[in-house]
Length: 464
Image (cartoon, rainbow, N blue to C red; front, side):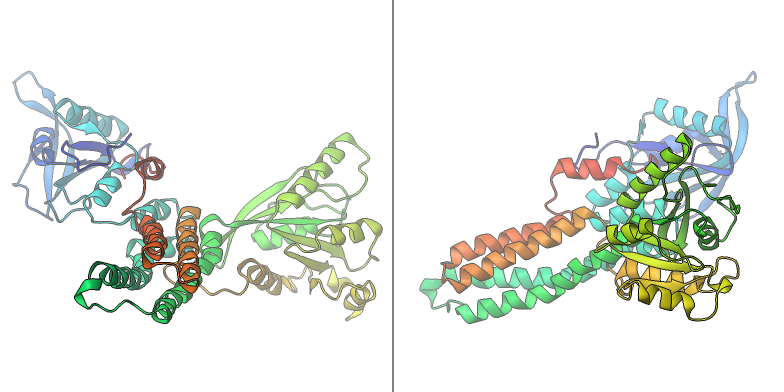
């Protein structure tokens, strides 16, 4: 467990992924970083802050009492406080042999360094004030990014986009608290008590910015976690063909025989930067074989778990009872209908077929998995359904902890506004305002409990 106080020791870790590579980095942070690294390598020039120096990685003492040279490395020194952790940091970039990196790590530990805990370098940056908690979380998000949009969002958060968005609200809240405190503390010194109308105005002025921030969680959560789209329908309606079109590769087996897909087939794609897991399911019908029955059962589970459902109908066939039940089951859920095989029928026939079935309220797209007709429109409709039309913006809430901090702030402000409306004494209103401030502080980490901080940093990789 990471100690949530100012560190005094020197830590070390391998900061590159496990396995072999062109380069591997061993990172040290702490007061003894320079002295320990000087015993790990033989520098060809003295270390200088923010400069890389060529060095020999030295092993055990040889026959002639000279240490063996086992590798060449570049050594970079970042002097406190101008480093990631605000401590002295030394990075030794050797060749990416696990043997060499493990040797450097063990030697550093033998010389007095301690193996870093997961996320401890970033934690030290947080403790030193180099990063707030939203920026620290963004470091992890950037490492785990699977799409360019995720990387951009994480980089924006690392740059303080969310903190900058919160700061004006926090500043206004602090000013309101100071105003009420002054009216209580200096009432005998002719300091005016803040009128009820002014308190209501100032509380009300805080709400729009917080509400916009709270709404941003819908988009931020999508970019961060992604969503699942289940493709369902009768056998041989073209589900697997549409799946392959959306995935842009032949991932699912396609044949003319119904029931080819027996198990769930999944593929992760990026839709305008949003991670989207496609799930191709077995055709919904009364299975004739045990294997197909199991596949159909799993299809129904995927249908229940999916964030969005894409119902594939065969434009050359009338809608059957199973499809009517399927459409009814998705009522009230985010769903789209792809009228597939539209290239096989006369223009307008598939649309009128749907209209006749009373399905005008369903989002219907005519598609042809064979020709590609309607695929781009389908992608656009999926994206619009997923995001609700919300545009990307800087400073989004990206996880549940951040969202709860903002909603708790809004709830506390609502309580303060109600207390003010009912002419409750200012001392009681201040309790609600301070509760709002503490909730807002927890967003960036000023008042976050130690156990939550430990949980956050424990999800990082070692070396970061």
